Image (cartoon, rainbow, N blue to C red; front, side):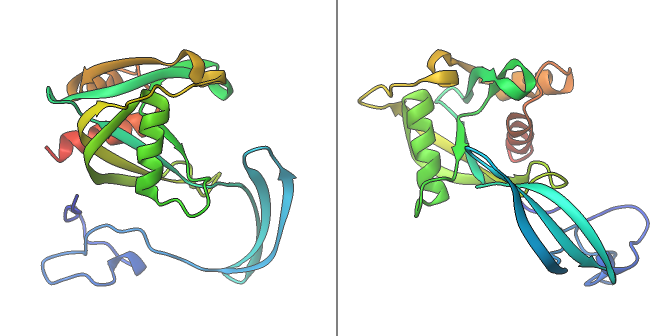
Length: 208
């Protein structure tokens, strides 16, 4: 996907750096590296840790706590009828069986994002694909964790030779093939709330 040129009044300040005669530069996040004076793990969890950093920001100390996340991948699998695979499973923090894309953590040492996406599609949906491309990436909760999710679009989908043995929340996963438009309608109507599903579907529609 490519960034669209910004519209509206000309930007001022650092964000306007690189502006052309025709207007401001396209919107883009700007990396920043303020000095971290102290950093400690205040909670060590089974999956993620919580860190507390003291940052020298604009000449003053600022304390922020956040979840140190492994990062994750997700898969927008598309069949020959242009339908998307969605799965429903229980998510305890929100006490909901929400509709999602197959997804998982980048928690295997040395595993690439693409290999992780292939593994998750097989483990959660018993599927494989011949063609893969990166659709979109985003930070899920910039104020609370450092998680980056990368969504891959997979086509040429077929069943794997073996079914994966699932447990816990994954044991009763429900699978369904639906149109992109049905997903977008559900997001805009407030029936679907999963952020990865929402962003991936909107990105896929925008790139059609």
